[in-house]
Every structure is written in C-alpha cells, then in structure tokens.
Image (cartoon, rainbow, N blue to C red; front, side, top):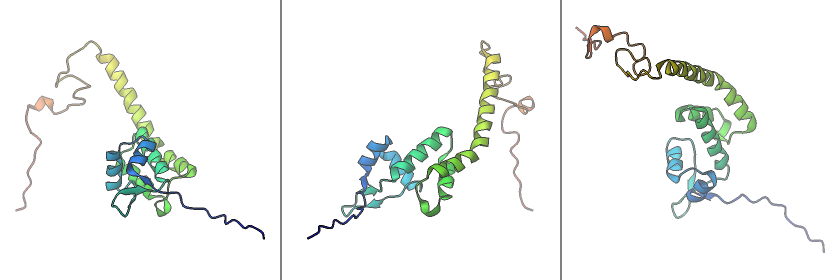
Amino acid sequence: MVKVEANLKSSPSPLSIGQLAKRSGVAASALRFYEAEGLLSGSRSAGGHRQYPRQALRRIAFIRAAQTVGLSLPQIKAALATLPDARTPTKADWARLSASWAPLLDARIAALQQLRQRLTGCIGCGCLSLKACALYNPQDEVAATGTGARLLRIETDR
C-alpha cells in the first residue's frame, strides 16, 4: 500500500488584535483607529473578538512607512484604494506609489531648507514679534491696517 499525503495548504490562523499589536509594534488603539478609518480590515471571531489576516502585518508596515514619509492618513487611504481588491501592497506597488510622492517630499525638503535659512538669520533676535518675526508671523501683509478681524466680510443676498 502506497501512502499518499495530501499537500494541502492550510490557511494560517488569524491574529488577534493583541497579537497584531505586538507583532507590528502599533498600539491596539491605533489598529482600531486604522480600522475605523478604512485603512485596515478584520473580522470578528464567534466570541466577538477582532481578528486580522496575517497580511495585515504588511499593510500596517505600509501605513507606518507612508506616515514616516509624511503622508496623512487620508493620503495613505487614497493610495491603498488604488490597489485591486484591497490587497496588501507589493514591492511593485510601493515603487509606483512612492514615486508619486517624490514631488511632495521635494516640496517639504524645500520648505525645511527655507525654514533653516530663516532660523539662522533669526538666531539671537529673540523678538518673536507679531509685527517683525518672519518665523512666528511670516508675510503678514495686513498688520499695517490695524488689529482685529478686518477682512471678515459678510455677504447677503438681496
């Protein structure tokens, strides 16, 4: 008699929210928030406990990396929405999405360099004046017209 073994690939068991938090390094409260914001999806066990597929770890890694780049959660959600069937991002997905974020990063780098230049010129000043400080109140063109809400305009239909 020949023994035949079934080569069945069993689906790995889902992770509890505690396990997912521990493995991902993200607080359970943050995971609940990601789920509420539509960035992460899970299911409920028969006992009502949150469960997540193992690929949620890769999705969380994507979310955290995108946050490190400086993307907001709505921007991350929009990026994840471009993936077919809400699947976990692949290396090719990351390459495509991260390339689209280059202009955003370039703009942030330029803004930080400009801030550094202003800061260097301001060292020792200590003014933090609403009238003169380029860091505290940059490009205040309305200061000369006085204080208060001068630009508030109420339009009515007549």
